Image (cartoon, rainbow, N blue to C red):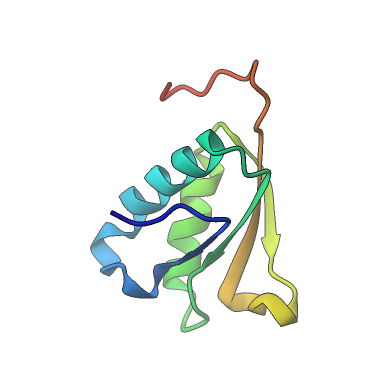
Length: 93
């Protein structure tokens, strides 16, 4: 089991599992009440970043996202804002 914190590093996740793991991570991070999380996907050629951002665009609890600042990973990480309101109904709840 992966510990849920406000930073999630995808480097240990096999590429074929990234989509489902990120979906589950976002659900658990929201349940823990994190308003902002950082997903580290690496720079590479941008494949992981695109997978992550596709998941973000389809996740109702995601308010928005942006590239991390240089000191937090720059293009190799994405900062995600989550809706943690208790009256917000996530479609997976």
